Image 1 (cartoon, rainbow, N blue to C red):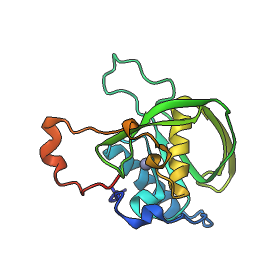
Image 2: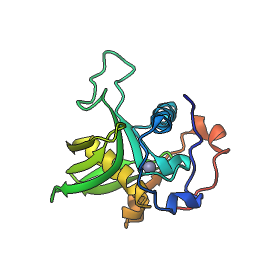
Image 3: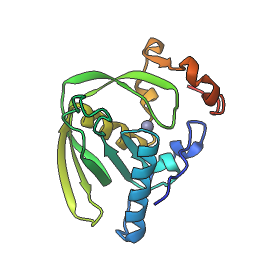
Image 4: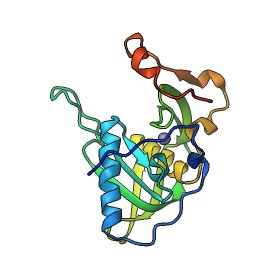
Length: 184
Ligand SMILES: [Zn+2]
């Protein structure tokens, strides 16, 4: 297992289309493990291949259980998803607004309108075909990650600049100065 380097918005690979996965080999399993480890180390809930410079159609997702055992967990938390060659087959006509961030666009957040549920077809690590219908937070994560595979970033969905803002808490400013300058 290894934590891979997450690339940022100024890296052109985030604007290159990911290729279909054809070999369901041990290297793919290793990649999925590395992606999960990388996502967790950054406290993310999803990560797509291109975000670590791997131009393959794969993403991982997991809503973690809260650290505080007293806290109410998100109803979709605790399940690990590894989706390969995912495609959205159906989506809700109802749009829902929600806040999103992206590990490739650190310190920024925005409000994005997305269909409230999606039905996705994909393959698992063994290459077996799977179909999943997800709503709520998972629907948002899946759409955000599939967007990455299709060179779309969440900021592309935001037309109103008031719906995009930067979070820079004072106590974090020192370490954040090492982050690259972001063109949003
Ligand atoms: Zn992202």
